[in-house]
Every structure is written in structure tokens, then in C-alpha cells.
Length: 210
Ligand code: GLN
Image (cartoon, rainbow, N blue to C red):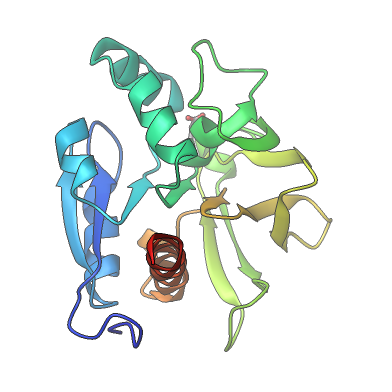
């Protein structure tokens, strides 16, 4: 939905398209009225109001970010306020602490994430989740070789847990992490939630500049 604070301004959100299931995110963002674009370079990211880091292989995405000299500049942009949402592998990359990653993560969200916490591909599963701040029925969440958020820092708000208490969605200001894949369902509410976060950040920046 268009923002009431920015009438006529369409949000542009980039989906990092180095590896993983970026195409599915584009459709879900567009369902929320967002101008969604694939991004592969820092210049493309700089044209966006927010960034999605998709699921895939966190080791591969980390290696590509390093190979393309994007890791440090991307970290800086995110620290400087670029709203960023990591799903699954993307969530792993956002964490400051990932014991089982053989490369440096982007490392911007104060949390510890365990990769492949539910076992292998065949142990993939679905669950209905209540997401804090989201209206309507529970969200159907698909977990594929999913990570779990084992620890969150003080600045991190837990948005959803499984029935056993394990954390699978969290937010730290302009940063969002989900263990699961909302882009693989036909429920676009999680993408709407992130679009709202991007609008909040635009509003905050406009207030700071005035
Ligand atoms: N297991 C993958 C990893 O550790 C994440 C899986 C996914 O993104 N669906 O990077």
C-alpha cells in the first residue's frame, strides 16, 4: 500500500540476487505495491529504500560478497540505516555470531544463529506462527534447512517463536531476520511488514533532515 506520509512515492526495495531464491521475493514485494528490483552491485543497492537478503547458502553468499568486495561496504550501509531483512541464509548473514559459518558474516544484528538447526533437507517442515505486531491469522511458515536464533541481544525484539520456544523471527530497529521462507507461501504479510519498516526509516530520515 502506498505510504500516507509519502503520497505518490513508491518504495523501492532491492533483493540481493547473487544466489538463492531471490525471484520469489520480488513477486511478494510487488504484491505490496513495492517497486522490487534485483540488485547485484553497491550502486544498485544505493538506489533502494531497503534490502532483502534471500535464502540459499549462507556460505556461498558470504563468499560472493567477499569476492565482489561488497562485504564491508554493505555492512557500513546497513549500519548507517539501510533497512535490511534476511530470510534463512540471509538471517544467518545478518547475525554477529554464527559459530558454524566458515566466512565472516555481515554481522549487524546482535544475535547468535545456529545453521541447519533442524537437521537436513528432509527434516524441512511447516508451522503456523503468531508474529508480534502482525494482524490476522497465524502466518504459515516454511522451514528448509533452517537456522534458529539461539541468543538475542538487548536491542533485539523477538517477533516469533516455535511452540517449543525457539526463536525464528526477530527485529533490531531497521533490521529483520526470519528463519523461515515467507516468499514461498501466498501470504504477503511479512513482506508488507518489512515494507512498513522501510517507510518508518524514510520517515525517520526525513524528520532528522528537517
Ligand atoms: N542451510 C542454509 C545455510 O546454512 C540455509 C537454508 C536456506 O536458506 N533455506 O545457509
